[in-house]
Image (cartoon, rainbow, N blue to C red; front, side):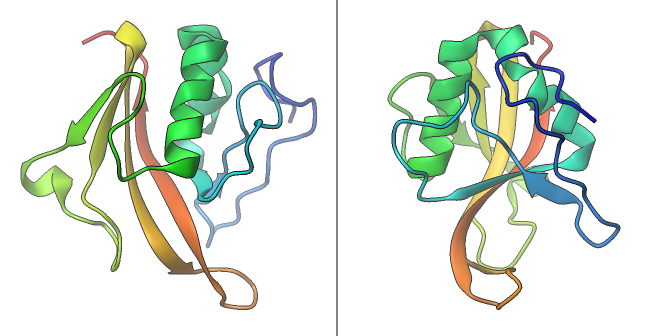
Amino acid sequence: MPTSSSALSLQPDPKPGAYRPYVAARSPGGRPDQAPTYRVVVHRQYLDKWNSLVERVGLESAQQFYAHVSLTPGSHPKVGTSGYLRGKAAKPKWDGYSRTIHYEISGAGRIDYQWTNEEAGGADGDKHPVVRILTIDLNSH
C-alpha cells in the first residue's frame, strides 16, 4: 500500500505482523541529513497519521520532530516544546524505557513517545536505541 504523503518514498509501508505492532517510521521528506542514532518506530494504529504528518503540520515541523526523536529524544527539543506526562499515562510501558514524553508539534497537535538506549528486539537479539511513538493527535487542543 503506497504511503499517503507525497513527501515520503513511494515504496510500500512496512508490513507489521501479529507479533509486531510497531513498524519503522520513515523520515519525513526523505533521508535525513544526519544518520539517526535512535530507531524510530510507530504503532501501526498511527501509521496513516504518521504518513500524513507533513501534510498536517508542514515539512519543516515534521523534520524537526524526527530529528529530535532520532537523535536526542531525552533532551529538550531545539524547536517546539516537550514535557513528561504525569500520572498513570507517564509510566514506562516496557522495562528500560523512559516515562512518556509529550511533544507539541506546532499548534496542530501532539505526539507522545517513550525511548530506551537498549532494546534487544532484532533478529540477532542485539541491543540498540529505540524511540516508540505511542500516540499521534493532530487535532488542535
